[in-house]
Image 1 (cartoon, rainbow, N blue to C red):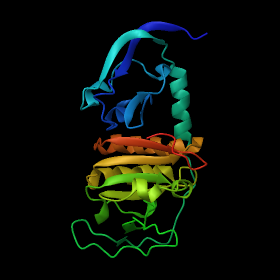
Image 2 (image 1 turned 90 degrees about the horizontal axis):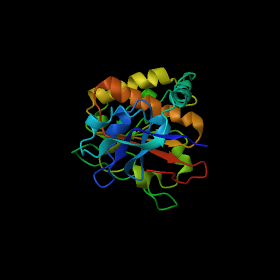
Image 3 (image 1 turned 60 degrees about the vertical axis):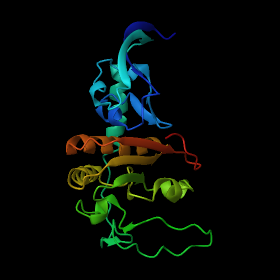
Image 4 (image 1 turned 45 degrees about the vertical axis):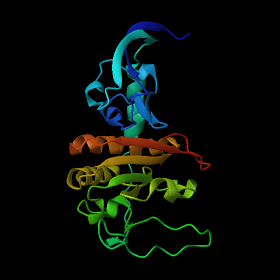
Length: 245
């Protein structure tokens, strides 16, 4: 039987919330996530009720109220954090294709569109390379961009990847939380956030447990960079369905 006692717990006003994700970054316990464009409390047991997220919400959509709730479970929070951190211990991956190419300049001449394939779908990719390990923080296409960091498998699993996640001011970087050197990746992403003036960060990952390491790495990079940008997390199922976001 679940025990509920009256204690302080966060409450989110969905009418005010615009899904910017600032609260997600400030919650060290990982109690908050962006789902369907709104901040949600994932579990009462993850919320310590101290309200570290309050001052980070630009919409004043979060309050702390005393209500009947499950007890804060510090052990469950620590176990979750350990799972995310474990994903950071990965072998190094390298690729020889490191020459920077930009297909569509920001504010300049737009390159001709990529050839349309048999499906009639046009690529929205605007630069090369796309691997996080190969892109320098000073790459011109990153300047003031809305950045999408996707797990390697996502574009293969999710058929609408280009349509839903690329285009406009959005730029793409990809990484694998299972195979890549995450210590180096976190340092690289931190420098990108610090130097490039990134406007927002969206992490798109697979539903498999190891992929949560990409989210943990991105959150840590945001905090280390001092550029606390709007953050969004989107999960893709192994059968190609979009789970949230």
